[in-house]
Length: 237
Image (tube, rainbow, N blue to C red; front, side, top):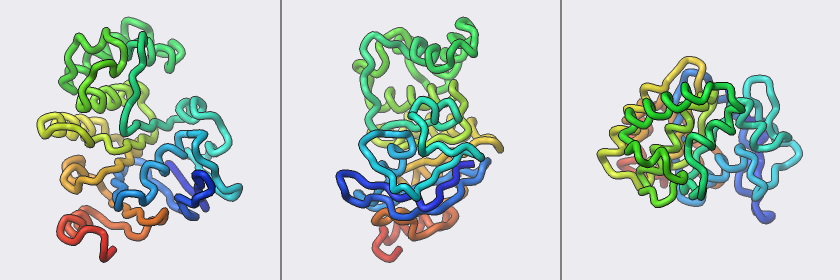
């Protein structure tokens, strides 16, 4: 479970997120939506531990009973938090295998890890030759986003925050990705998907839709809230 208490975040002295208190329940899939500039990416990046943001001293975030707001990004990941990026960077000279091998500290034997990566790559329709190339080097937008999902699956986090995982992805790749995300659902996992597309939120069968405006959750609902967004946008929410 991811729990936020009085979660307030600043960037260059500008207040981006304001006093958010909310608990994300294991086994449920969440969509966070809202207008541009509402704080959605700040939500993801600040929880990852990015040094570009400053938390108010009263801000708290917990994974289960573990407080994560005071620990380094890699330790947050070790506790079970996975955050994907809107624009995954190129990692020259580093393959997805070598990166995951390092991240897992040898917890999965090398041959078993190799087979798992290949199996997930097949499910995600990732060309096999990309697995031996530098991560994201020359990859298309869809290939980069699929590779983020492959990493998520291997690392098996308890909470995943996917920041616009559907952006820059064509319709065929979206279908593959939504099917894959559905296959990853578990009573012990909490996927949180940041998206601008009601259709994508619907395709991954989100349980709860949260609307973020001006740094605050202003509305919460089930998939019927997506219909309101499609018809009216955010002006009346």
